[in-house]
Image (cartoon, rainbow, N blue to C red; front, side):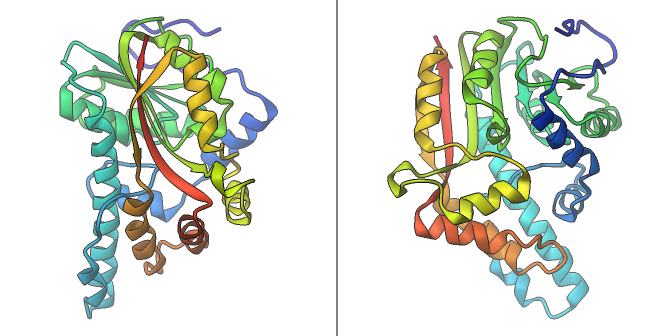
Length: 292
């Protein structure tokens, strides 16, 4: 078990990980995907998730190829930032005295969004040492490293103090872990009445077993997408009571349609997401739950 941080520099203790988690860490330590890096360079908010909302399709009508590229990149970033703001809006009301926990923080954009919105303290955790280092450098550049810190740790066993957090979340990171272990750690970290939020892709139980498209997404990201029902069962077993559930599937489709047209950003998985959303086998879900 790692020791809890108090003040000063973020911890760098190597987290305890399974063989699978080591593979995931290796993936993210080596990741240099333009769809993550190019979008983040716009305003130094690096998100590792997808966007929601209606897209401005006029960016594709731009006749100048270089300007069309820039406008398309900016529009995709706007959509993913809208998703981050949607999640952050479900955490409150928070005050500058509150602490929040970002599980699977990636390059740190979500923690920054929460801090800028509420002034709160934030601890982000990632099993990628490279991501933690990158995110901490961004916090230093923004001069918010006294309030926003990132740790190279396992989100299933953080070593962070029990009951210290008013809110916590997973943004497209829950498909990398066992849900009962994950929600048990969130329940431990949250104070009574604290808010937990997850935005995730999940496969639709009413469709049947995981579809071919879901299997392709798993292979692409080295993850294991859970069925929708598993979230609600695991939340209930870990004292987390849903208070808001929102199906974001329709809101996510414009992002993927636009990204498919961005030749400089495509990864080859875009059409798979669109097919899965449209055939009903895959859903994009937001769940907010209170710790009881």
